[in-house]
Length: 301
DNA sequence: CCCCAGGCACCTC
DNA sequence: GAGGTGCATGGG
Image 1: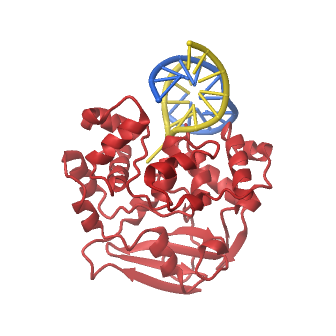
Image 2 (image 1 turned 90 degrees about the horizontal axis):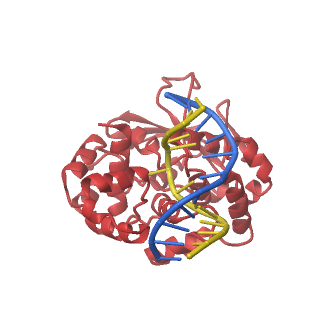
């Protein structure tokens, strides 16, 4: 077992791990339940198991992380390179003060920044992100997470770490072994066929990462070639996985926020409203503003 | 019993 | 392109 800390004490920003992992932008992390460690305290850990394509070691790894202090993370892992993994997945390199400085401040933004201090946009692996947001339509956040847990347990790879079992998210090839019926059996409902058909497209060579160099709006349109991916899900994949920080997913929460706080941005189509609200939030980092507002509003103030 | 959930595909016009 | 419908499932 490898262990380490990641300290923010020599920087001006920090991280709020629970806000980052439990605000509905990623469904791939699990909050660890129970006394899984005997060697020290066991509260507050989050876990993820990564398939080898997504690790610096090229082998599957488990990473556990928790908030040790306000400006410090603590991790345990199967690899000594867990810090590299965490920097990527949690965007620890982002300078939150610089980011907030580029977003026009108003009352709502100010409250969200202050209430959710340390919240970071995540960078999920692309395929798991794509599938989990296909599952997200008309579904509560807790259940979306539950669906991903089922998908991992049924079709992912089990990895043991310190006496406990963890499951990677299935690769496209692994998930393609699931039939539509299998997916319905784990509660995906009408999304089962979307997941099945999208997985099939990925297995047959349509990798979402091939859209990485595209201009934002082109990438958003391109992602909609997958089944179950409309404007909103495409924006989620762009923002929470592909690093398009200007993407602003327009969901029910953000749309009601627009009606209430930015009525002049409301327009007749997703396309136009999206353009307006991105401009309102300062353009290139608008997605960060969206993530703070979503997290702040959803939790209630 | 009804209503709703980080929308989307599909069908008209 | 804009506008309306049906949609699986579980929890309140």
